[in-house]
Image 1 (spheres, rainbow over the protein chains, first blue to last red):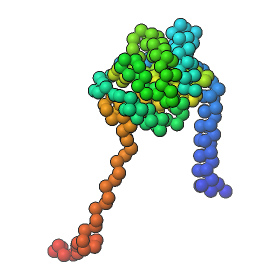
Image 2 (image 1 turned 60 degrees about the vertical axis):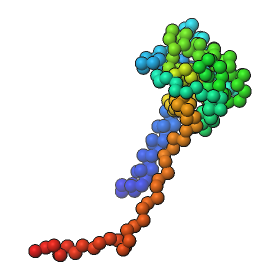
Image 3 (image 1 turned 90 degrees about the vertical axis):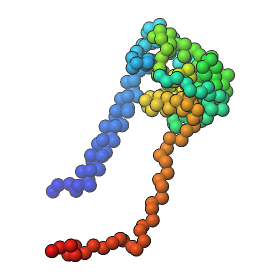
Image 4 (image 1 turned 180 degrees about the horizontal axis):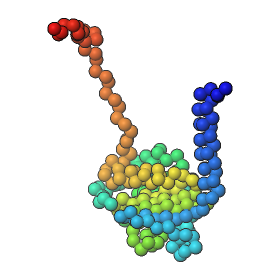
Length: 69
Length: 150
C-alpha cells in the first residue's frame, strides 16, 4: 500500500532540513579565517594570513573586534 | 562610487548607526568615519573605536595599493567589515558565520542614506491605501444575456 501523500511531503521536508543542517555543520567546521577586499570596478582580492598584507589585515581586524567588545 | 551630497553631522550618523543596529541581528558594534577620518558616531564609546578603525581602513587600503570599496575579514573571534561611500566609511563587527552579503548591503544602504541626508530612512513597504467603497446600488448592473440577441 503506498504511503499517504502528506507523509511523503513530511518526509521530503525533513530530508531537506537535514541536508541544510549538515551543510551548516560542514561550513562551521571547515571554514577558515579569510580576508577579502573588493575594489571599485568589481575587482576583488583575497589575502591569506601567511602574506604581509593578510597579516596586517588580520591584526587590524582583531583590534577592531576587540573594540566592539 | 557616488559623491557625497551633504556633509552629515553627528546626529545623522547616530541615526544611521541606530538603523543598522536595528537591521543586523549579528551586529556587535559599528562606527561611521567622516571625510576627515574622525569618528562621526559609534556604538558605545566613540574614543575606543578611533584608533582600531583608522588602523583597519589603512590596512585595507594598503593591501591592494588603492582605496577599497568594501572589505571583509573573518577571524576566529568575529568578523570585521568596512564599506565606503564617497568620503564616508562604515566599519562593523559581527558574530562569526554571519551572512556577509546582507551585512554589507545593510551597511551600504545606511551609508548611502546618510550621504543623501536621509539617515534612518524607513525602507519598509508603504501602507496600502484603503480599498475604495463599493459602487452604490449593490453588485452593479445586471445584464440580461438574451436582451441583445436576435
